[in-house]
Length: 259
Image (cartoon, rainbow, N blue to C red; front, side):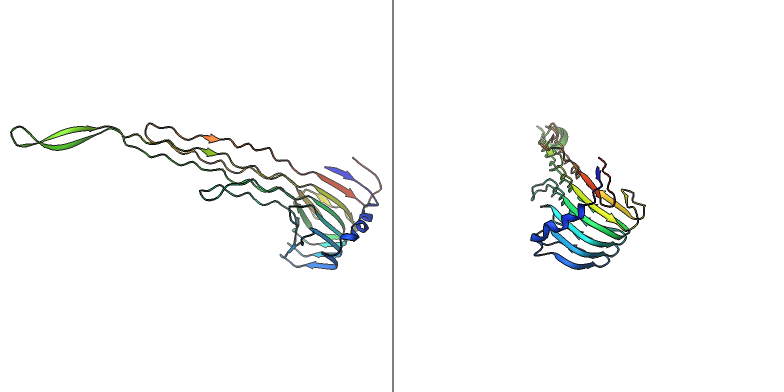
């Protein structure tokens, strides 16, 4: 995590004026538990932003999202998210997929008030792998009693050995699909006479940054082989290890620079 303290960061607000044809508000108020979905430009420019408790701003993870506000009032347990979708589980009718990458976010905010804010760019969880199918069970040797007519014309009971019937092999399974990469976060911020606390879920004036890669999906279970046959194998998918997103913080309140 990099922390930079630059007094000129909010001058960036003017550089996006050409893109302000949509999702530009003099005042945007998001009610308690409401989810505000940013439009197709994935850009939200606000003069005054009010987020009541448990309000959410949702960006598409497919392209970088931009959020800028000259004045922000943020309640408790609010969220700004571009989290990637979870992958699809492999089934008999559906191919599995990896988790979606989380979208990167560039955020510039002046906090007039801050309760607790989560910025979530995590990658989606990978879909579960293909499950194997059990083979036909087969049957072991068995002894069967039968009535047969002897030379004297009378019926007698004899024991007959019925040979084993072999089963069939179990089919193979695959490992789970990879999770999505975490998106990067660049947060430029200033505050009104308080110091935000980062990554402490219990702190007041807290900002929680979630940028981790998505988890791998669960491995499929190989099928069991029937009598005298082989169990299926677990086939390793060629998955690249997903990467966590990076975080860069720009504290506009201070003039000093730290790396």
